[in-house]
Length: 236
Image (cartoon, rainbow, N blue to C red):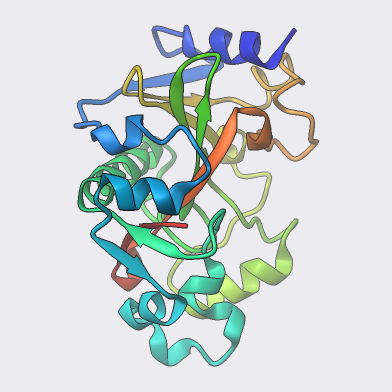
């Protein structure tokens, strides 16, 4: 089964079931998101009206955790996921991404994880354009750093956010850690990697319940959001 067929199978889910949770959203999808078809992001943003381009120091200065940055790799700019060399913001994208991340947080409430938007959990998404589907997809990996798999990162996250609970890969919600947002459908598809993923190995080739986002199309950029430290969404 081809990757496109697998994605079509996933995005054709119309109602939540034991394998896929579909969440229909009413977000305003900005035109700039629909136009991100090329990895030449800086040029595209400049053409479409980028309102802000940030260097690493500028992003770090926004964080309320600045006094904790006694190690370089604890800085917000270093924790962020990035596809581009520079950081960018666009007003409409910032608003949209804030609402999308908050919708993801609400979706996780059934697992009693009000702390979802944290450094050890969900703080970034990967934006792809899939030409076969003619759709912009955002791939999310929540529960990023379980302490039994990524002990070093889990410890560092706890150093920065000591009030945020740690977790292990045995946590009930870990198998639901992967989600795909479809701009065309304005919907999020949260995937049970243990059931749906095991039947679609083309998209889940790893043993740790991780969807391989590199298979989802053309990687445009990544979006990061650190609300606990007061940093609004930025793309990189």
